Amino acid sequence: MKNKTILIADDEAIMRKNLKEVLSEEGFQLVEATDGRDAVTKACTLIPPVMLLDINMPVLDGLSALREIKKEAPQISVIMFTAYGTSERAIEAMKIGAFDYLEKPFDLDELLIIIRRAFSHNDLLIELQELRSQVSHKTASSPHEELIGANPAMQEIFKMIGRVAPTDTPVLIEGESGTGKELIADAIQRHSKRKDAPFIKVNCGALTETLLESEIFGHEKGSFTGAISQRPGRFELADGGTIFLDEINNMPPSLQMKLLRVLQHKTFERVGGKQTITVDVRVIAASNKDLAREIKAGHFRDDLLYRLNVIHMKIPPLRERPQDIPVMVEHFIRRHSLGKSVVVSPKVMEKFRYYSWPGNVRELENVIQRAIVISEGDIITLDHLPLSLRAEADLLPKELLWQEGVPFKKIIEDVEKHLILRALNQTRWNRTKTAELLHIHRRLLFSKIKEYHLEQGGSSQEYKKK
Image 1 (cartoon, helix red, strand yellow):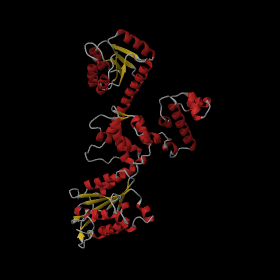
Image 2: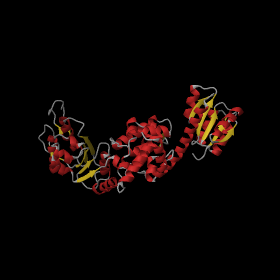
Image 3: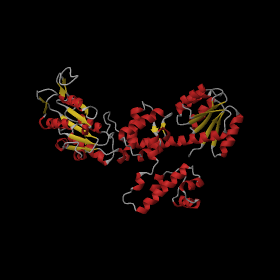
């Protein structure tokens, strides 16, 4: 909190005097405004971090003043108060952009809590502007570019896409659910010589064996119950183009044999048919399981894997590439914020970094979309995250347990710092409660705080770097 200025805008001299006495004792610098127009002028000139604004003001009422202030200086956290509180006024004030709303007479302790929150909010905006400037230049500008990653493994995949896209070589993409396998397939198709030809997608795990066979290879009229007419399959529809077989690990063994024939000879028959159909189709397959392990388990044909696995791409899970998360967050915010300026707090970004992300990139997008919907302002905070994410992210960061080239003693020290700091923050730096929480003597706690140079407001990662 560098700038501690508060602008008090109230037409009652006694109210301004009382507020100045209380707030000056708390170390704040105070500026006064006596009417709505004066409030707007001083707010837009001084740009104080926090402003106290009465709704009932002469010359220009508080709500009108708030509209002008939020238009010219939206970064100011404005706390509204009035002696005539109504739900309509409160709703209107919050809609315009007030930080909070209090009715007179109000409790001074409550006001101080809100003011401190407002200053924290202002500091957060400054940090987020810096964060946004750091990641904005990394964000892709192409309308089709949705593949994001500075991780070395992802960079190699991007290079591989550029090499194999112009060919007709089969491609196998492996990766956990939600890592972006379909996006990789889309990119290959988009940059291929078949980009203007059909691109047909099939989810092999979404249908029964009979329906999947009909979906892929088509069927003749009367070939099974419900086959009231002849229907071409996905391979026929993809002739001259590309077919994407997603979750191919779920394909039944009988269909695996038929697919192998298509890859070898480019021919097949429809279900219930005798006519051999020849197609020119490039095959891109994806699996959310390790197919080599599926072969050992007897669930997948080894000869089919050899045919599919000419070009192999293994997408790392999101938990293995935390450096990609900030840019992905920016990308998903732009996609779902409908033009609204939304950012995430540094604490949220830290949580994201240490969360395991079982749903990978898809889960991250869902978390961002949910947070945008439920957030009241333009900042995504910890309160907007799912409980499951907050709970796991609060555990000991994995990075503390594994630091390549770092002596074991140093790792233990880092773990100890992290646990002590977590306990201090949990008790709001009440040393006695922290010592009780950690089951250690207060003298030892004081000694450790001094030894590790811990300060209120710091994070475990900051101390880890010292």
